[in-house]
Length: 329
Image (cartoon, rainbow, N blue to C red; front, top):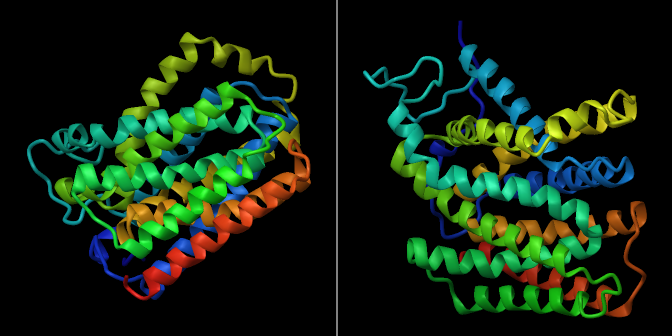
């Protein structure tokens, strides 16, 4: 019986000079799903005042583990470019133990990024959260240079500069300034930059495809996050959460877990098909829409001309970068 394989990153080269049609579809899918994911997470953490970010991240990892395990057991997906049954192959973990160890440089930044992201989403309003996240681009460019020696054209650097300039304009008059929340977002940006720039490198060195990288992240990070949640008492406190059995809250958690799985798949796929910087730019382009939805649904930031101007400048910078990629510059 033949099974339909889902698209994998090993079907395309890791680097390309311009964005293909498939790359454009992947980038667009990421932006749409990312907007929805942030809204769902914000609703669960703020609207229902769910304070246990580690438990929420753990739920998302558990969901990913179950989905990947079932799909792999049914042979709908594979984890490596060439499945092999070596002496070190672990039938429970699906990948060789040595390969699992080689993904540690990717898994650890991923774990920190996941935990810090939840804390950042909870602690700061959506418009300013998306604004501050735009500094991820600068961190990603630096990581691409130091880790992979990758250089970018002058026009790409200019477009990135325009985006960051717009972010500073947008946040210049934030009336809800929170030094702790801002610091958390910057830590999140650094972790994400390291993670994005490591995806292609680790994938190529280990032979793992998109699903294989996701699996290793979950297997390595899940137990650590479980112990951390238990140590902080969040697991016990979650059982006493007043809205735990409330249908609306459960629906948000389910949607958050489902979109997180899809997001992790799309992020790795987008990074390998396009580039780490393109993934960072996509994050900023969709932030315009996230800010608008966040403003309407959650508030937290009064209308301000500087914020609107900054968002517009950032959007133009993202469009300039997209133009450069379609032209192969």
